[in-house]
Figure 1: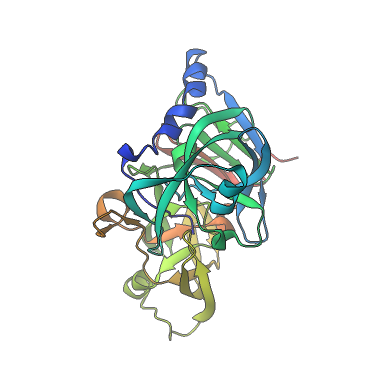
Figure 2: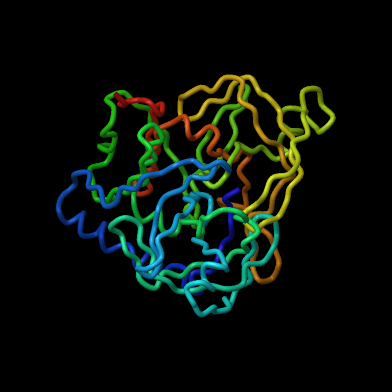
Length: 326
């Protein structure tokens, strides 16, 4: 799952935003037309991770998972060792969603297509999360939110656009689309309302999550479900972004509506309530002023859509994934 951790801005994580912002400021000066600043082939791997190519220090060609649920971008410790990067301890204690601390960062030149971010600060994550994978790390919302993020699952493309465009004039692939206002917290997580079996819930859009998740306490409160309910199936454990394991159940609902598009018979993964953020004092808080989202929307459902996240507008534009495809 993609929710990683909050970090005080004084630790230097905001430098990644500063390093990559120049290109969309330049594009804004050219007018309000939709301006693409990067385009990358994207795939969904066997573990349901959204993967794109990238380069590190202009010498290592590799791949990254794209994770809208991660506030900070992450690098595997073994990759940092391979590049000979110097580790620096961060002043704040930062925790992954499972509660394990992330304590070090490195500076590296990160390149995605034409976008080059020198001295990008990446937190180090344990290799256990991506064991057996060639993925070097995660690109999180600290990078992505500087742009509009276009996830073209039908065409297999991840596009980044300048935010300097006319409001509402972003859907280039279809004349028929839906739009949904979104909320962004101070960590750039994307929240939106959804409807699950007739109940309106709050959801976070998380491309770092393989499945769509509902915390067990909310399943009990909203739908009267517990691990012994009819139709509840044990599903092993889910791995969080810090390598923790959460016991998981699966349950089939009747309908789920996301931004006006209805999914029939969706199967959600039910997990214990997770602690997503922590400070050095050990106190845990949630997103959006202390609230945890009731649903985490993962790749299993998102890959059926074409999504355009207009971070600057606080708007999500949506069509089915095959809209506009030949």
